[in-house]
Length: 322
Image (cartoon, rainbow, N blue to C red):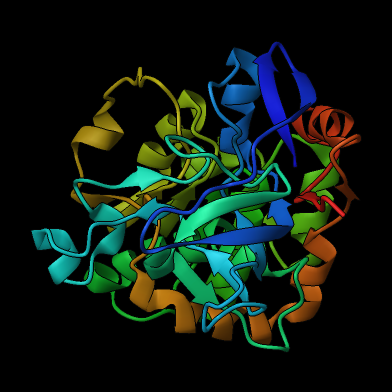
């Protein structure tokens, strides 16, 4: 089979790779779609020892298996099912988990091996090209908002989204779906800002956000300026949901941060039990999610697609190997 190798400095090569040999309790998944993610820009820049790609949907290719030929999305954390977190239903927090596309070969390939317990069956009404959105774009963001609801109560409050990349745009849709509004967004890129506006989010300048006070702030960039802005913009007894990733933080504590109570929450992924709720959110706003997937490429076009994505010229493109 063919698989992508990330060499660093934006270079991707396509190489022959052995067919996945599923271990006990695993199946072979033929990749139908794998969405590009902002976190994949790190292996794109640095190189990676195995094939990345973690927002994966495909079809089981395991003759003799009861699920052979069935469609499924792949739950990223390969959870053990036995630790304290797993027994409590917090499968995404499994202390022993490896991640598909990070510590195990991922979805920028024609196929991969996936543990059976990580298969998320896909209903017939969810097409392959939208199925990967159920994972990070909806799953991670919705889990973050649900965490905030534990301390803030149900929706209805104004919200601020910092960054309108795939996760930020997903957050806008989730916030709408869970009843939050009005929604403001800070986004420097014109293409992404216009799309956020088409979803009903009002674009505001960074200084305007710093001077306001929002009960709920979603930080979706992973960059220190946005993290600093979130701390400034959150209302007293409000909540910040931190979604963006980076290798280090460097922030300043100011008087406006010091002199208020607030919650700082982190959403890494989602418990596997949230999947049904994620499906409901996708179905409720399917037309908008359709627009979010704005480009696609196969193996030969993956490097160029990533380059456009890294420049902010694409929203949520997908890799389709066929």
